[in-house]
Amino acid sequence: MIRAAALMERACDLYLIDLFRRLGLSELLQEPRTADELVREFGFVKSADITLQAMLWRLGTNTKAVKILESQSPVQFQIRVEPPDPLPNLDEIRTELCELGNHYEASLEFIDFGSQQFVTALKDEPELFDRLLSGQKTGYDKLWYRATNEDPLQDLHGKMGATAIVELGLKGDLLEIGGGTGNGLRHLLDKLSQKNQLERIKSYTFTDISLRFIMDTKHRTDGFTNFRINWQFLDINKPFDDQKIQEDSVDMIYGVNAAHVVKDIVEFLGQCKRSLRPGGRIVFAERVRAHPMEMAPRELALNLSIYHRTAAKLHPEYRPTHCYLTPENWLKVLGLAGFQDGMILDGCGPSDDPVLRYPVVVVARKA
Image (tube, rainbow, N blue to C red; front, side):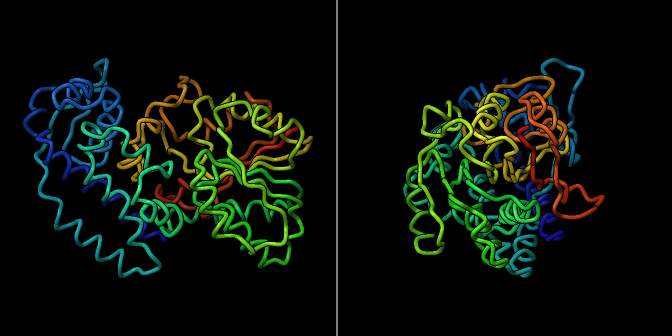
């Protein structure tokens, strides 16, 4: 897994170099320009400046292609060195990922799709990725299922979340938010079954904003478990008690790569706190940023979603950029929402390698 994560980091840089060349940025950045100026040049939708800025910032940080002019406001970018054709190196990475086995090639599929659809999603079909991520885009369900379940680097999050619930000894009534394609539910059922501890879950309420994801996950898990699963629509950007999730009604709230997508993170955590019984826990398996400007490899595709890049209510102290938070951001918002004993669990073990620091489990307790 360590090697695969490193290969994906490198692959992201190579895909971005390919996009840099395809978009003609070598010529356009002969003089310093902002991401917003480039958006107007390309005729992209307005919020695409967030996508381009993340791309150019990563290239400026990880490669020699781009110079970041941070002293300018807004930040400007300029070409530093003409990057060579990255495709031969990408082919080598694809081959090595396949040789690693264990479906590691699925790690590359989603960002490869993002690279192919980059211009289409930012210009001609701006709702493409929002529809894909919510199960509304016909014909792409297998792609998203593989990206969220068969990609071992993503699947790790579900394993970590389930492990945390088991090792913390949590039990009772569980609410899963943003259950999506069922990664979190699948891993928790597997983990509890292995331990012969399914009886620890009194009831399980699986929720998502996509009725298609709810029905598909229900179909996959029918007959697997002997405890009650409630299947329910839930918009985590709206009050829970208006959606049949009552105050003091659950013992734990679980999510796998879901909590970071909310618009108002502090308000959302407040909703979670109200829904929990005293002593209840939140357990969120999350991808975190090492620093606010870091672009995750998957964001080559995710940043093509209007919701992903624009929904977050930003705050300079605890949510300076869209979507993913840093560990420090998480601890800050947990405190603001009134949770106690907030902690960030790293399931990969001690390592100085930055590619191993991004999967964590966020845990906190209601007094």
